[in-house]
Length: 244
Ligand code: G3P
Ligand code: MG
Image 1 (tube, helix red, strand yellow):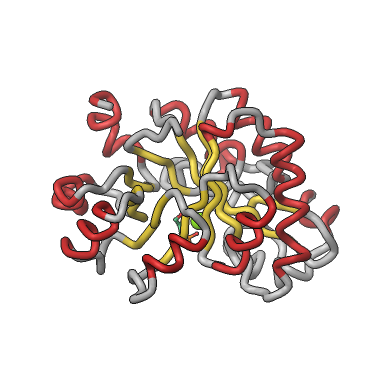
Image 2 (cartoon, rainbow, N blue to C red; image 1 turned 120 degrees about the vertical axis):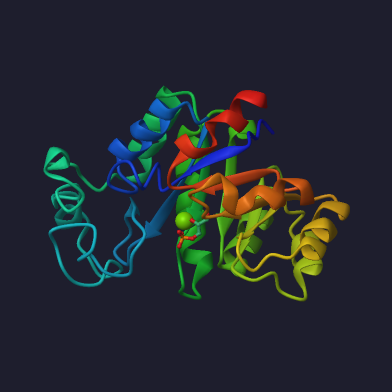
């Protein structure tokens, strides 16, 4: 796996409208080598790059993302809310995001954003798109807060680099990581303790922390063994990337 120390969050969410192609390009311009984006399966069967349950904050549409019509969502403006210069930016499909990221030569941390329970239905189409379009498995991580979704990923393809996403490290983290031969634990930097971090590393897993937008916030985490930081503003960490 070609992991590097810095990963842009939702592209580079502080620099351009999150989870758009502009955001991915803005991340690339900072020199960061990896981006995290959210894939959101909608009920009628489309795979869009989007974070929120509802459309209001990041588009000029309204209503629940899950229930949106694919054609309608792809016609929305997903950039003007961030700044007039981004007017006309669209919600990307998974295929469009993959094409953009590969063209830029970057790594992809694809977060499966799904709170439903019918993971048997939503995971296979995501893995099918990846199998068809993503070329370098050493530059691909699949992460999710939805553990059953990761279990399906594992059942379908043992070669995937799976990342269990948590806010607080749960008591059963080791069992969970072991059961899916996870690559990493991706956790919120703030509640993480030194003891937890060192235990994850001692067990042989990578440790990624989100979402820190200033270097001083995770100063200690590097000493504890953190492998990579996920940030809205990769510029704040590029001095570290240069060392890796
Ligand atoms: O991958 C870390 C981060 O993306 C998890 O939280 O809500 O920003 O998707 P969220
Ligand atoms: Mg995410």
